[in-house]
Length: 105
Image (cartoon, rainbow, N blue to C red; front, top):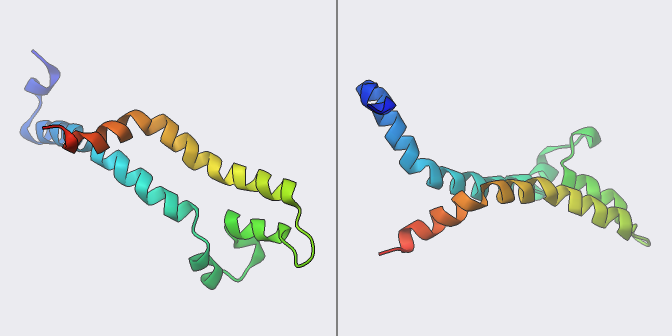
C-alpha cells in the first residue's frame, strides 16, 4: 500500500492539492519576487533613513552629477540580480513545465 492510502482524508487532500498546485505556486513565487526585489520608487517615497535603503537605491550613490563609477555600479547591479537569477535557475524546471502545462492539448 502506498503511504497516501493510509492517510486520512485531510492528509490526502493536502497531498494531492499541493502536488497539483506546486507548479503554479512556483510561477507565482517567481513572478512576485522579481518586482519586489527590484522595487525602486515605492521605497524611495517611504524610506528616509540611509541605512534602510534597498539595494537599487543604494547603488544610486555611485551615480554622480559629473562622474559615475561604472565598474562599481555594474558590479553592484550584477550582485543585485544574482539572487533572482539563482532562484530562476533552481526553479526553472518547474517554471517551464508550469507555463507550458496549459499549452498541451
